[in-house]
Length: 282
View (cartoon, rainbow, N blue to C red):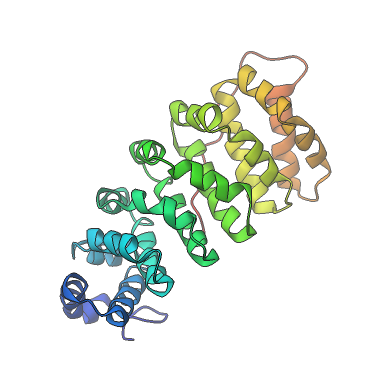
């Protein structure tokens, strides 16, 4: 309880307890105790990078990942704080994110994103979105993990909106922070364009801005080829309909996309898309 609440307890006051938490996570088999410790770790790591680092320095990332694997089908009440702790860690800097990736986090996201409990699916997609907000190397590792991006795309395609939104952030971060090879993977291997355009039809202004920015990065990679794919999946019709939307920022983004990539003149010179830092704000 000392670790709970806002404002957060001074880190120096709770540091003496951290090694005890780590020891119990490594040795304790009592589920209720593990749940309490996992929640404490999630409270501690919910904040600035120095708090995240205090948890990373305990060396418990592999233990948290193993707990995800061990309990994902039997104890949602344990998975929730464990996954939140790992999710908080990957909101940190690139090295902190890498500590969770190196511990095997990505292997556990796909099954958790397909969990029967909605809150766990949402948390898994949120965690994924913070990994894909990392380095190009981390994005590459994410895309190379079997069934991972496929599961996230499925979460973005259907289901509860709060889950779809987190999955949308994950995919958008790949488009805006990844290289051309990562965008090609999404578009050509994973056929992501229809899913992105379907997200635009929901009417969430913030998600509309997010996806339109991602589409700018996608079309920049191959304006002609990907422009054809956009038209074939009905995306151009959706963009034209969106010009009637009641949001000046969305309208401007839509008009810019249409003029830039689907204009009658077919300009050869295309300006590079604006680079935005897109990470989930949940």
